[in-house]
Image 1 (cartoon, rainbow, N blue to C red):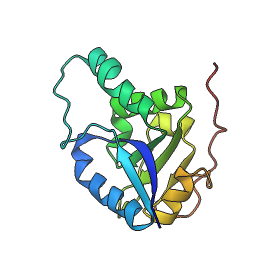
Image 2: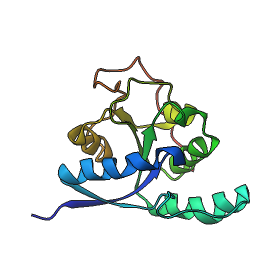
Image 3: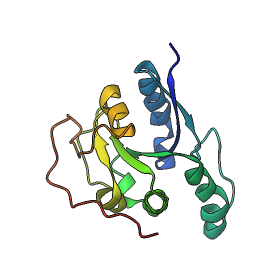
Image 4: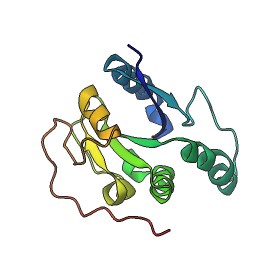
Length: 158
């Protein structure tokens, strides 16, 4: 049986690069293979100009992916880059799934994820795959319990 393959962009802060391998392995052991276009320490971005980085490096990588996964840690909410990436994915009508880091006790979500996310799930391969496939649309705490009600997701105007 062949595994399902998805093109994803994992939005994260570089300090959390180590958790990306664990996330990819979790998905793989649960039957989903991913091709990841995100920028990380294995595929670094050495550019310095923010406009160049956004238009020439990040935008094409986000546009290529069909799914954005946001790797949620306490510092993620403070990242202007993560919020920009989420907004870009939303404007491209991508599915946006937040995933709490393994062992998380919860924290504030990036503002753009709260506004535009399709789902936020805990560290559970089956739940992540359900959210990526659009079979689950809800916001959960790291332990899998439902979060407080979220505002209705708005759709980008064409």
